[in-house]
Picture 1 (cartoon, rainbow, N blue to C red):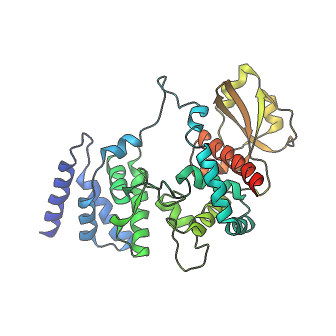
Picture 2: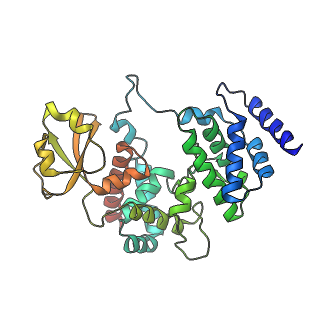
Picture 3: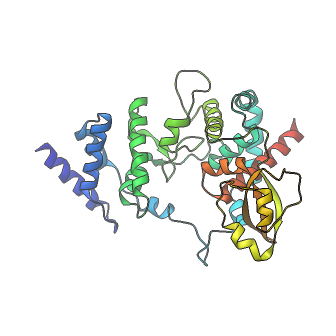
Length: 330
C-alpha cells in the first residue's frame, strides 16, 4: 500500500510539472532502489523527496548549450566580458588582502598560485556574492530525470548530493546553489565536493558557502589532484601556418605533442619553452581575429574545472590582472 501511494505521488508530481519532457517513474524508482542497496537510504523517504522536488523548466533552458547564430560557441572576447571585469579584479584584490595568510598557506601546501585560486573564486561566484539561489534538490532532480542528453551524469551528482547532505546532517531541501547543481563559493558539483573539499581551517567541518579558508584550500586541492605543476607556464601565444590552423585547433586539449612535433604540424613558435615540453593548441577569437596559443599542463588542469578553453583563458586572464593590481596596491 505504501509503495503504491508513493508511486501515485511521484506520478502526480510529474504531471504537475507541466513539462513536454518525458520522465519515467520507473527510472526514479530504480534510482531509489539503487540508493537503498548501495547506501542504505530509506526508500519511502527517498521517494517522498523525489516527489517533493520541483521540476524546473528554467534549469533545462539554462543548461542548454550557448551558441551564436551560426551554431558555434560565442567568441572568446565576448565570453571574456562576463568574467574579466573591473568588478572581478577589484573584488579579487580585496579578497586577497583580507585572506592573504590563507592564500599563502594554500600556495605553500598545494603549489597553486594565489592568483589562480582567486580567479576561480572570482569567475565562479565573485567571492561568494553569486552562489546561486536554486534549491539543489530541485535542480538535480530536474536534470537527473529530464535532461535530454546528460541525465545519467546528473543522477550520479544527485546520488553524491544526497550522500553529502546525509553525512553533514543537512535537510537536502535547505541547500541552494547554481542552476547546474554547483555549490558554494567554489561552485563544486556534489561529487567534487565529496572528493576534493577540505577542512582548511581545521574547525572539524567543511563549509564552502561561508568559510573562505575552506573554499581557498578546496580549490587548491582540486588543482593539485588534477596535476597542477608548480611554477610551470600556463599558456603562451604562437603563430600557425594558415592551411594547418583548423587541424591544429581541433587537437585534443590534453597536452600530447611536444613543441617540436607541433612545429612539424604547422606551429610557428619561436619562444623560450623547451622543444620537448608537451603542449596543445588553443584557438581563441579576439576582436581583431583568431589567435593561437600553446597551452601546457596547467592550462589543461584549469579546463578540468570547466571543460571550456574560453573558461580557462578567462581564469588565466583574470588571475593575471588581479596579480598586477594587487602588486600595485600592496
